[in-house]
Length: 70
Image 1 (tube, rainbow, N blue to C red):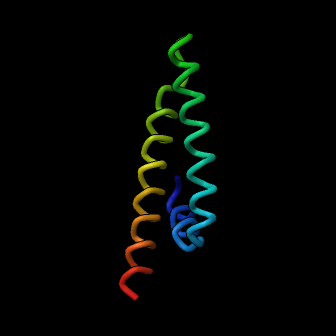
Image 2: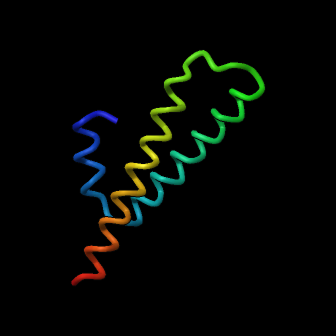
């Protein structure tokens, strides 16, 4: 994720973040599966997807905590 994308994604509502997370997880598990069968050409893509997933989960958690504290 680039810095501009990060700022844009952080502003999304919780439902949109969930949709982004689902898409990211599908890509991650698909690449992981393909890597098991035959080594991937770009292994860094797996790492970036894993980190993007973690970022999305963090932002979702922040939003839910903010909603609960209100």
